[in-house]
Image 1 (cartoon, rainbow, N blue to C red):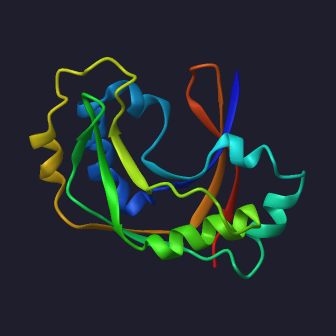
Image 2: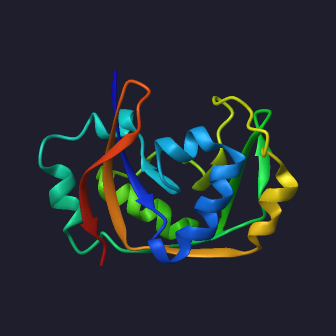
Length: 163
């Protein structure tokens, strides 16, 4: 099975402390994909004709997004995430621009620190996740198309700088 998503990777300048924490909280997820916010999931991208991503992500409406994340929270057992608390309007505007329509399903932008589908790591601890600090503010200036084959690591297919 092949999956493709459009994602916003945490820029290198802000990524080091997040990646260090993810490597302890969930080494499996850390090895599969770098810290990111999913912009468009595979089912949403499947409806776009060839060349549409290129056209929309190079158009003036494709703008960088700044998100402020709240304190880490647990979900679905041992999953841990940082949910976006500010910047949501710009995030959803970018989703609408990329997908070319209003009425795009809403999803809460977040950074996954530990995914519950992976085995619980010995270091999986919400208190440890709280050491990251609050609030974490990240500006995402690049949109990246990524692909996963089977359950393997995600790989970058294409990147677009956002205005």
